[in-house]
Length: 428
Image (tube, rainbow, N blue to C red):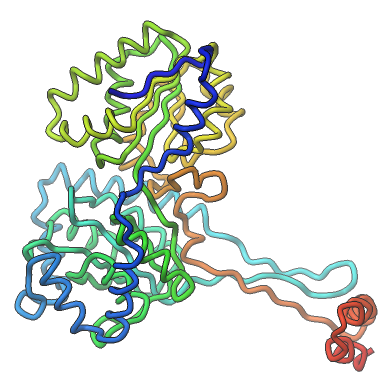
């Protein structure tokens, strides 16, 4: 059964702290296994990928082909049901438009001392996109990762996707074609991340790797950060819903289950100021689980990680929400902005009764790749900036150096770096 807490009850503080600190990552210690895989790919290259793909995905890269061609991807897109293709195209358009507004502006100015200072933004040369191929197909993830890279101006986008038993999902291929992915490789797992980071004879290295995956993929990204850039180390999905009793309990139950169905380690939490509403939502969750094709997964997640928390007022829930710093936060009330103004930590916030989190997963426009595991305290969702870097520049003329140079000499002398001081003083 999910956890049931009352903020006014004795022992609530300790129980809530335990909820905040609970780990939902896979129990297995995968760090050593991932390190071995990464080392092997770096040393053996393609031979390691062939062996590991045969072992984990049960197919032969040499026999089935390493790369999925543009012709196959185009055929997958052309073969989509017209309504599904229209939905995918609508999502792609909205995602591209939203992210286009994120592009940073270069800066170039002369300051009061007469020194020219500024910054120039440029995209990385190549980005790698990891797309999961396990529990479900995620064409939306392809769009959410590839389109910001395209908006940023990345020159080459290489996608890796596991194809169990050699079978590729046509929806994923269609999304890759729609998003303008340049290469699609039939490689998954930690070995795919290592291949993108170091490169092999077949797969050229990239500068940034983005995209979700299982514990092994996340650990590979963590270990290889510095060899390549990464978006984030993502953990299990999570949603927090703040809702009053004026909501339809069936709607809120559906929202909670929308994340629980992702994985047995997902987390769904409801805050409400209405005891009777809390009971009604709990009953609805039970009823809806019986009809979900993903019910077994969702039930495991709900029973192990779900929580219903009754608070005296919805405003009282917000400091608790900030401690959770959830990936997704729904504010299902008539005036969500009043609550939103008090929220400090959340990956993405869904305002009002008619904004389910799932609309953000697909067609709203903002990115659905978001920080999990309380990382929204210091991290943001995937954006165009993850595919760009900033280069600052400085230009001093004689007058500008005369204005600021003596201070530089003084600071260099104070730090015990005489060559630094001399390189400025010699010009004064």
